[in-house]
Image (cartoon, rainbow, N blue to C red; front, side, top):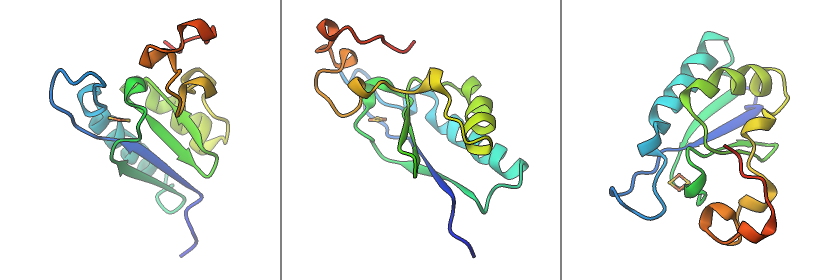
Length: 127
Ligand code: FES
């Protein structure tokens, strides 16, 4: 069997209500994962694209968080209605969905404005 061309990791981590960082499962990440799986199957892409359930990707303030490899494209604030664009544009067409991408200044940095530290950086916040 040939290797998968892409892995899509969807954070489905759950935290207790009121946690300061929030969690992706409270923002419908389970539904988003199921939608992605269904759409990949419907298009006959199951042997090329693998939809994976992930634990916390440490981008909690940006949830629902998804990362696509091998490109390393990070998506944030993903909602169920965004699934068709992710599948059609990125997973089929090879073009990341720019409106859903997290800015570099948001990924893996304490200075991210969503963590309360980047307001002075002038970063344009997605959604
Ligand atoms: S809970 Fe989803 S990235 Fe941390």
